[in-house]
Length: 189
Image (cartoon, rainbow, N blue to C red; front, side, top):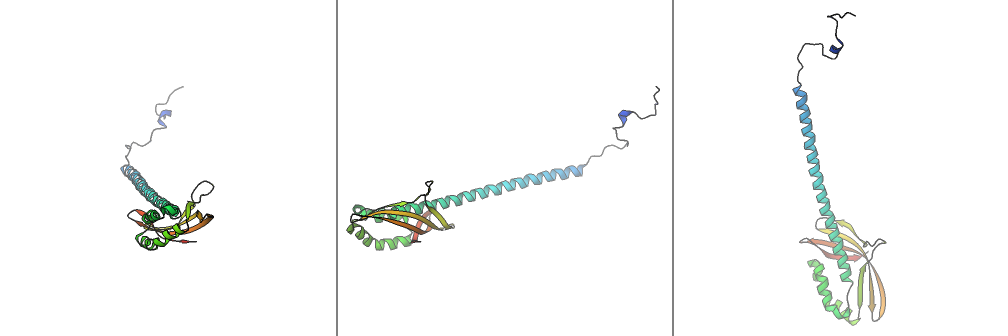
């Protein structure tokens, strides 16, 4: 077999047929680098935004929990007293109240103490819980400095040696003063 020197070689088939030098593509590389930078910046901005939302949600949830705990504590303290400590009852309740409500309560406290003492009234307050042991306390509405909290509670009372179980369903209006949730008013619902 004779080889023709002008015939193409099989190894030359993969080679470009032009004699022009290979061009670089700086525009394409620049666009790709720019797109990568945009994606990276966008990802960082999204991460910081998401992180800020998480912190805001966490603070909001902590505020909700604090309001519910304050309402629960108030309900128990308000419904727990004995005739022997009727005078200290006012001192235990007052710090849980807003200035407005504390003034109203103190104005009526003499009658409250007299009633507890004369009737030999004992009371033990308790916030009810669901089957999983979670207190039946919930937020009806809340913002940065006020909240409406719903509470389901019972008070086991003894008045003149007669037992009575009182069932309470309250809507408690709360205000936030210096970072603390205080009761501004409450009503049965």
